[in-house]
Image 1 (cartoon, helix red, strand yellow):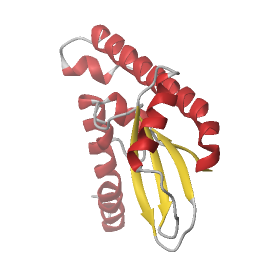
Image 2: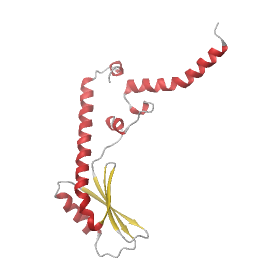
Image 3: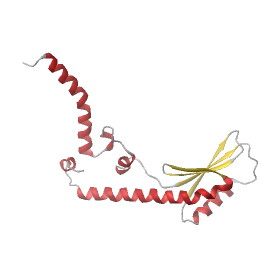
Image 4: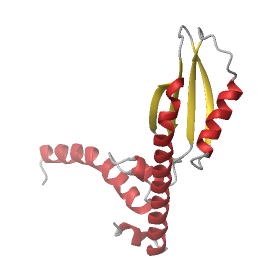
Length: 166
């Protein structure tokens, strides 16, 4: 006969371990990284197609409310477009008003990387770095797609074959 203490300890252990085992089993069968306990990474989410990895360059221009300038926003946008065209890159320009500030600054955002802020007079210093970051993000995304395509061609159609994959 099983002792009462052994039954209680076994029940408590199963209540603690069973959810993790179920989640890990679901991960092995579906390869969905949301099911993997404590193992969600950006690479796994991007590989599964659950988040987008954008290599787009966004130039965020912060204009202080106390700035007295006769430069129009379209002139700034055109100047940045011309500068990035020389590197064969596209840029999306966004403007942001900052209260109680008397400066104009430029921050380049590529994927999860932030380059800057630079004063507007030195905005050209971040162009080359942002173009390189864009190319690295796109190369990484292409490598992830190739790896995913390779894994899909290797795997068989049955779900049991996925359990034994790496």
